[in-house]
Length: 151
Picture 1 (cartoon, rainbow, N blue to C red):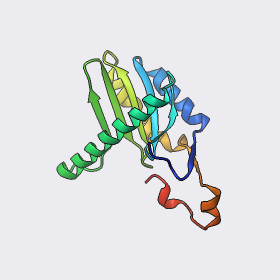
Picture 2 (cartoon, rainbow, N blue to C red):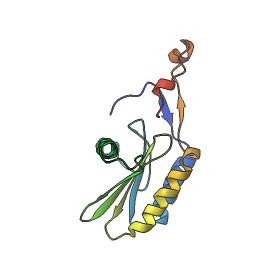
Picture 3 (cartoon, rainbow, N blue to C red):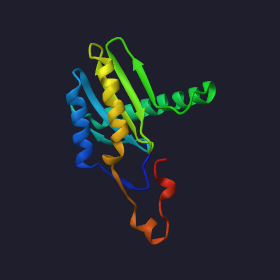
Picture 4 (cartoon, rainbow, N blue to C red):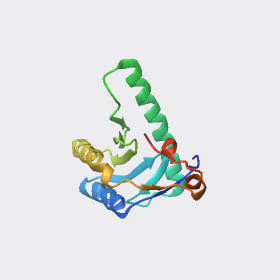
């Protein structure tokens, strides 16, 4: 994963919100929020750094495919990508700020329940997302860092 010019501080409310999301839907295995291509928070069970790195790469590829599909086929902005596997589903949804929620659920879980919970989370995500801290050198030089923030 690429290094960011600033660091993300995950809030307790983000971790609690992800825990709640995973707890509410039977079969939810993990949830990860990616901000600017990096895992900002992980939850139930704890996702190891190596797996979080792989997830970040996969999600970046899925996001690129989704955006290319939107450009090619129209239909408005990309909201969600769902991957159905033989024993699991992966939900990838983008918030208004550009952060990406990724949730994996087992194949026997209720997909409709997870779709609903993902939509709720995305709608309320801004209140849980991390705060960005600019390096002292960027602030001293007058750089606001706005070009480094997620869209």
